[in-house]
Length: 233
Image (cartoon, rainbow, N blue to C red; front, side, top):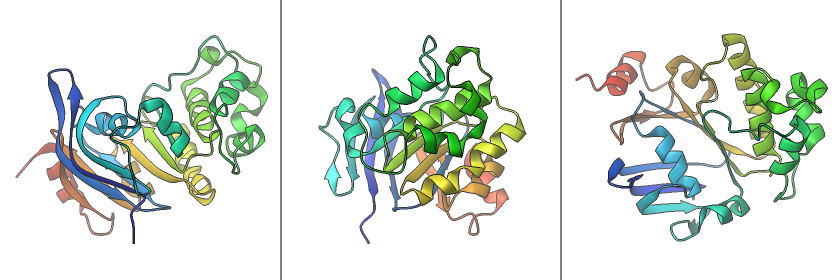
């Protein structure tokens, strides 16, 4: 079977700083793949390489097409959407306006404002509110909804649970099966091993810019993941 996303020998970084070293992963259609690791492991850099935001060498192939020479603004048209760490909403705009921006370059599919509100009913009464006046959980739901408005084939979620209350995190992760059922494939970056194992079909653990362990949650013990996470022999 041809993978939806294949990354081989990826080296990436920022200026003179190299964050990824010969990294390779693959993602199949309809999967939820978790990328776990400590701060500085290179998880966010991997997502930024996929969307074209960092300098890189190596191979990133999405649905049979190399992304290496394709600029970041055109990768959205391939059906790749990133929910960045920290959400990065347009603070001066309302919830509705943030969602509409996400649908500016949309593909045919399920997702529109009404579908997003059905997925995240907590933001339904907030459409006319300015986005920077909302809670972290509300903002995170809006950020995911904004990405879904483009009807992505590959949704990249960067630390969506960071700084949120456990009940809010639970609600966000409960939305993932509905997102996959709509036709999206998901890569999620997560520091919380327990949350990642509960949501993912497969897991890659990263350490110092390299994959240190990979497999399905059933194949990987907590001890093995912890050792790979912290680099403990």
